[in-house]
Image (cartoon, rainbow, N blue to C red; front, side, top):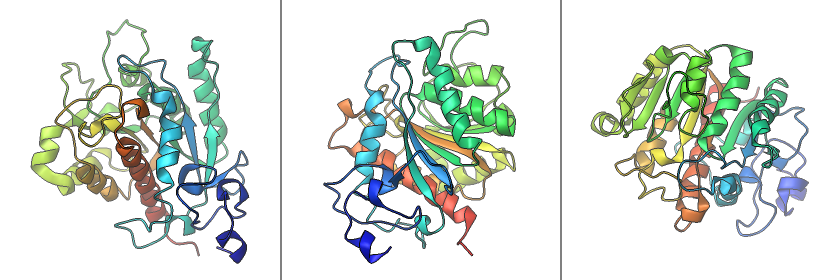
Length: 321
């Protein structure tokens, strides 16, 4: 970081380089994710963090449209702290930008899926990796569709309280509990190479997905969970999606459909930090609902998970030569 940048405020818009950590007071300044530069210029970027502020597909409590904003705000307290459990600065290895939010017209809901899909295509066709902040979990469907179009059928690494594969075979309903059934039926996901982690709601139809229920994760621990995820996925291209309600409501009350008995923040982070060496196509973290949060702990949990996902990518990329 140059001496000019050391004394610079609002580095989300003033920072010159896409690399390197930045420091400014957590309570002030323009809020991007981890103070990364806000830009629509994808040139030179390795990762684009992008928000999809959607909550029109929820089945219970609305408010996840404010999720991306809340996660960005919570990330401000993290950007001056060296990432725990990692012996490197991820921003010395990865050029990360905040691409801002996906635009869609909420008054024309029939156009939203295509708007998110086109937003994703623009980024990934430029050769830039996507880390997306939701929004309700339906946003994963058009994101996966764009990624599968480029990479072929994906392994889904899915952290959640719910399977999100509800619906009948001839049912075309779209909401945040149906999108992975739709992705499966359209051949976007390979269920035999996919794994759902932390599930604790019942759905008789699994569509062949491998499921590590929350009690299994607790009983077997993070190392066994990581090993099982890697065994299932193998060398297939993978898309990781983390619904914040995978965490118990004690750790993440700010979500639309909370379910007790979920993972602790510690357990989730230990698993995430072990998921290196996987060939990722894209990632998202969704369902943060700040209206139901307490002391911003849900937003902070999501921001920390997202920051650790960047560390996973930086670990696998290795240091710049």
